[in-house]
Image (cartoon, rainbow, N blue to C red):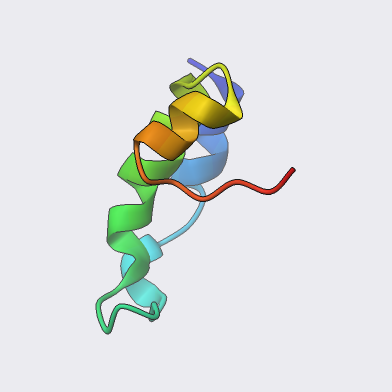
Length: 52
């Protein structure tokens, strides 16, 4: 088990409101995809914003 999986699992993402008018539950998949990427370019290809 990876530490990121444990950390993401600590939160009830469905309890958080998000800017898209839905809950933040969909962020878990985005966070896991982001951690799998090896560079900012790969993350951008998934339409995940990164900061330099």
